[in-house]
Length: 476
Ligand SMILES: Cc1cc2nc3c(=O)[nH]c(=O)nc-3n(C[C@H](O)[C@H](O)[C@H](O)COP(=O)(O)OP(=O)(O)OC[C@H]3O[C@@H](n4cnc5c(N)ncnc54)[C@H](O)[C@@H]3O)c2cc1C
Image (cartoon, rainbow, N blue to C red):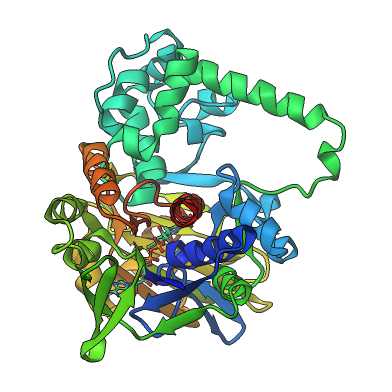
């Protein structure tokens, strides 16, 4: 019986295990699968703490509806009833600009405004900035296939103000990245597609809205459960990990096992060196660790692949959750999901989510929860400070921005040291080398957030593709 070892127990490793089990079963192939995770806890960047009735997500707090793979997996696992929508009655996001919170005009996730009035009346842009965004429709599509930075793309199509006020905090903020370095081809290929297919983002947005309206008219549409743009679980994102682990019962998952090195076995297959000086043999290996870890593990197997992995940079981020008595902050807390701070404001925080406004059931009656984000290109050093200093910094920021001066009743700091990969210019070339070397090394597979999409839906999608490749390879 063939043995497949998966390294890493984050969402990429666990979903690879899930799809492998499913696909091998469907094909009637028997194989032993073993998942090895360095830490005692599964989930990687998905981590939820349950304290005194609070549900506190330290890493991811949701997945998006529009990349369908996470939602599809939830349906497949029969756990759709455990999902929660955002509390859209409180919806809306602010952008902090020059000492004031401005409502983010609707629809700007596609960079161009969806509602004319909210765009015209916003104080976020100057008149010239608005006119520049307005003429996006007239800007010709780019010729050639060269990679472009996110900053280059947005400025070319919509002007500098849109980059500074919206694209940097909202779009680049997803990666905590620097838009002057990020590759638009690797991070937001959808924008390039919209430009190529429709000539402009404005035309593409109008076409998408028309399609949505037509879909909503289809018979049966309104009887389907309606999902918000952001989706989470009733018990926080860790519930997803627990349900995934339940679905692969019977398969071997070992925590507290760190892999140090992978080498080739004579006659085919691989040998893994793990803690305690032990060795584990495998016919196929799936590596889902962060790229800089995978680079070390694979240096003897493929120096070229290892070099490409080393070139994928990572950034430090952190989330700080603060709980308050509701009465202490009620007047100061606007009805919204939170606010974003453009880098040009040069503040110590990137954003804050008003967790209890955004999600139901996250804190006990009579309390409110706020989650602040630190890190990003301006604030890497803050992550290295003590919990007390970090908490004081975000409290100072909340005082300036929201006039919240009350004493929190609970605080939690989560540091994510080198967890957020950056897809900078040249990323597609690195991926080409990694893919070629995967093809050159029989039954060696690499997947995870470092390569083809950082969000949970992308990690799931790529895990499914990887599992399919492994099973196809075993069937031939
Ligand atoms: C603060 C924050 C907020 C985020 N918010 C969202 C969000 O709201 N929505 C969204 O879609 N995405 C979000 N993301 C991104 C998303 O959570 C991650 O991209 C995704 O969880 C990565 O999963 P992964 O399995 O690829 O990697 P990881 O979760 O990093 O898992 C890799 C695993 O490998 C293990 N490992 C490392 N080295 C070894 C070794 N030598 N041997 C064995 N095991 C090893 C690690 O311990 C870890 O468990 C967020 C990320 C962060 C940090």
